Length: 560
Image (cartoon, rainbow, N blue to C red):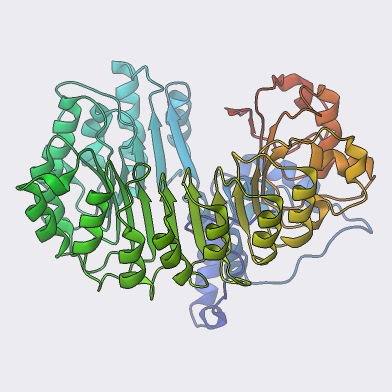
C-alpha cells in the first residue's frame, strides 16, 4: 500500500512509544471499540464469513495496540484505507474509527446530494474536508434545502471547504463554526451575492484568485478588507483592480502569515502611490516561510524581495515572471535566505551568468529545484545545480532543458538521491532512459515525455530497466519501459505505484486493449490511469478479472 505524501505526514515518521503506556489506555481502547461499531452491523455477517478463514499461506498480523494501528492507518490515502477494510474483520473495524473517517474528503455534487442526505440521517457520518461542486449548473431550490440539511448534520466538523459558488457559501456560512481552510480559487461569477468572512472566526487559510468578473472580485475583496479579529496564516491574493484595498487588508495579516501566494497584474514598482504602500506592508511580515510571486515584471518581484525582512525564514520561494526580465533577483534570494531556503521554483526566468553564480551558491542547500520554461546556457546550469555530487537535492523539475547527452549524464550522475524527477517537455532517448533507471534508484515520482527512439525495443532489454525503480509511486512515460519488462519476462511488480500516465510514441501509438490488460500485472495497486491521446473504453479493461483491481480513475474520469 502506498504511503500518503500529503500534509498528514508519513508512515515512516517516529512514533512516541510513551503515549501508549498510560493509565488511560484501557479507557481509550474501550471508547475506540464502541466507536468502531457504528455503521458496521449490516456487514458483520459478510465479515464473519471471511474472518475465520485460515490456510497455510495466511499472514499473521503483529500484535500491536489499536492506537499504533490507527496511527499507521491515519497516514494512508483514502484508497489505501478502503483496501485495509478488506484484509480482516479486525482491520475493517479499526478503519471505521471516526478519526480516520473524518480525514476522507467528501465531494458533494448535484448527482449525489440526495443520497448523501439520506445516508447521514441514519449514520453518524462526519467529514473534516468537503468539496461542494455544482458542476457548473448550480443547485436548484430543492437541492439547496437538501444541502442545508446535510450541513446541519456535518457542518460543525468541517475544517476544510472548497466551493464553486458564493451563493452556497453565503447560505451555509452560519453552519461552519470550525472552518479553518476556505478555497475559492475556482469560484464561478455570480451577481448580488454577499459573503462575510467574519462568520468564520477560526479561519486560517483563504485562497481566492480574483480572476473573475469585477463584481465577483469586489464581493471577495470587500469581505477580505472587512475581516476583523481574524489572523490568517495562509493566503492567495490577486492584487489587481483593488490594489490599494488589497495591500491595506494584507497589512493586517502580515504578522501572522506563514504562506503567501501573490499575483500582481501590473508593474507596481512604477506606481508612485502603491510602491511605498507595498514596501510598508512588507516590512510588517515576521513569520513568512513560503512565498509565491507571479507578476508581469522582474522589477515587481525585486521590489517585493528587497523589502521583505531577512528575519522571515523563507523555506520556499517560487517566482514566475516573463523572459529576459530577471533583474538578478537570485542575488537577493541567495544573500538574504540561503541559510533557510530549501525549495526554489523558477518559471519563465532567464538564468544569466550572474544568476547562475548565485544558483551555484545554493547548491547543496536546496532539496527541491524547479526550472520551468526557463532560458539558460546548459553548461552553466549543470554546474549551478550540481558542480559536484549533490546528495541534498531530492526533487528536480527541468522543462525544456535542451541538455546534450553528455550534460544529461553528468547532471544525473551527480544527483544520486533524487526521489522526484520531472523531465517532461524534453524528448528522451532509450539510452537516456536507461541511464536514469541505472543511477536514480531512489525515485518515487518520475515524469518523462514519450521517447523519440525508432530502434527495435528489444535492443533495450540488455541494459538497465525500470524494474530498478522499486519504490515508484507515480510514473509518466511512454509504454516502452513497461514493454521491456514484458519482453524480458521479469517477475516484477510496482508495489507502491498508484498513478500511471502513458503517452503514445512512435513504437506504441495506439495499443490494443489487450496490451493494457497484459501490463496490469505489474501494477497491482494502481488507482489512477491515463493514456493521453488514446481512447480507452472502460469495459475493455474493467471487464477483465483482476485487471487493475483498485482502479478508481480512468483517463480523467472517476469510475465510482
